[in-house]
Length: 301
Image 1 (cartoon, helix red, strand yellow):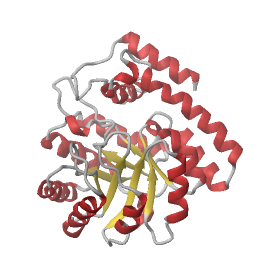
Image 2 (image 1 turned 90 degrees about the horizontal axis):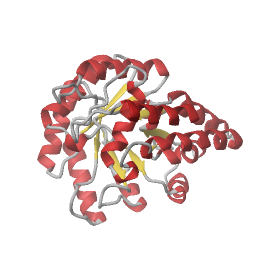
Image 3 (image 1 turned 120 degrees about the vertical axis):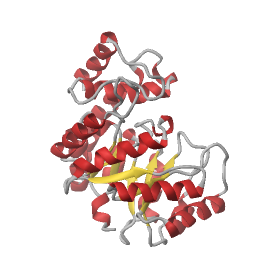
Image 4 (image 1 turned 90 degrees about the vertical axis):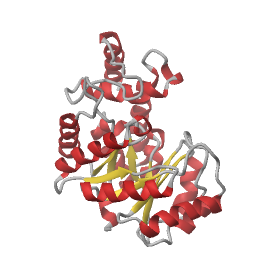
């Protein structure tokens, strides 16, 4: 794979759901058009923000299929193939490739904590047989197993592991990554935490996060300012991103609900006429009071 297809600002997309509780494939297409028209480089379906864990295998495939139909030559499509069973991971990866994905994203197995050697074995066995390039997904705020930097230095030597999506709020870790893994060999570091966008841009890393769906212009400006080394502009833009993270706590239940994390992004996109607000986890939709709360956050940015 040409790793340049993973460079720039990519979006961890929501998964639109219709009134029947199925993937709204028309809305997926509308989102892909919106992402491309906004200047984003790629899209990740179904992401953790896209409620991957609440979708059936058929729904996950429908999501990737709909996104692939609309990507054309405009966007790189990353497909989530994660599972605790290696054979299922490989089945998911084959299906994603057949549907038109460009790369597969793989999380560590969930539930149990694994050692770094066990994780190395899991990822390299998957990469050995996967028909698509793999991006390993280190979600340090959600998953029990963390991919530490020494393990990443081992994994990046594999010819079929193209990069890492690194999601956390640890600026020191990003600094260490920039020093130990500068990326001259093509291995791509995609910063996942919205609060780390500014740091990642200054370290010349790439971006793959949720909130760039809401304000792609803001993240594209941060990316460009970081490439220029404009520290002051990056800091000012990051302050606006930090205000945008108020979406995650503005709905009833606030930070206590992981479902509302995704729904708040859906609500912001619903205000643009791009998708509905139905949660894949709970099946609930948001009311006018919820939308007004989301609008207030957006107006404050």
